[in-house]
Length: 146
Image (cartoon, rainbow, N blue to C red; front, side):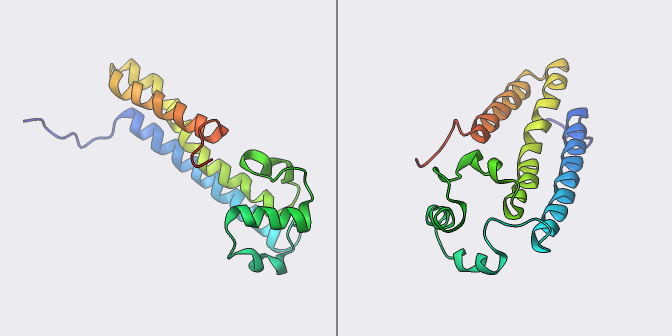
């Protein structure tokens, strides 16, 4: 029978360390950007008093409505389109969300060399594949439902 290891590997500790730091950075930025938005320090695209009126809409309908009423863009801000709007308080809040979503990719990329160095090729290949899939999904190249 195989004995279960009770100690974390170096890669697990490294992954957890990076994840913790990324989470704290993302959370810190989330508090800052939300404060800039909610206290009116940065003007939002959608006035704060009108936001609740859009909550019941499906995403596409919401995007059409705010584009028609406030943004007046030629194309709806889908995918990474929000980046052009980070000067607005409500869209500024997407930066910490992107940080929190992206930290997992960084974690995988950082542990890959250690996995191969200690001869764990299967986990190394899985980590490479996972990182690539996450990068492709985040880039918008891999999409579902379009």
